[in-house]
Image 1 (cartoon, one colour):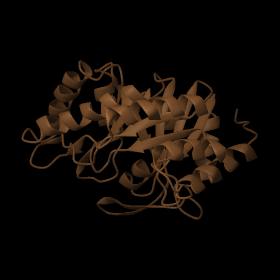
Image 2 (cartoon, helix red, strand yellow; image 1 turned 30 degrees about the horizontal axis):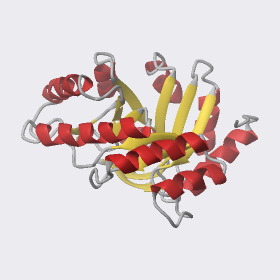
Image 3 (tube, rainbow, N blue to C red; image 1 turned 135 degrees about the vertical axis):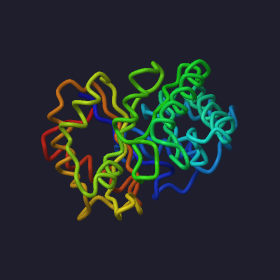
Length: 265
């Protein structure tokens, strides 16, 4: 099993932009970074190509998080949502990123069954235009959002370009402080490559409220590390820290794996 750890966005200790961030990630002993387009796809194609070059030189895995302004459950917003995802895919291809992560949407006035059909159609359309970049549907943390593990897997089992992005903290929040790692991994077992997010999390009856540092928070990061290492079928797993401490918690998680005798390359 190959484990790659890194931050969501520019590390706290980096004073430059994304190119400097990639070099910084390598310098501090991490192996991945998620490029954040959450406020909009503002990166030029030229910069995206430079990102890919620097990432390859530094052996840092690149992923992309598409804008938050996406709602594939609302027919009035699908066109713009698809454009934002495909714009992210275009940049991702130039960066040699293998997955674009996005939150599928909100139920709103539609039933869960209706939302599933709408999201399925949108993903099927995007799969024909995503330039061989994987479409990463993220498990979501609020009860008002489309994105339970079951919903995500129904889409991923039908559309070849779609893969699940497992946000362990979101699942924990959505399940009111419970998480069954064995069940999660059994459901996603057909995917030998896994892209994941981790952090601590604060939640209410409505689900996710905010991300927290992993130390002294739940879900317990050491339990997560043990659960991952027990999955012998996984070939590669990328773990992106969405903690407010970004790379600091990625390094802390790396330490937990090393305490369990995992050796990073």
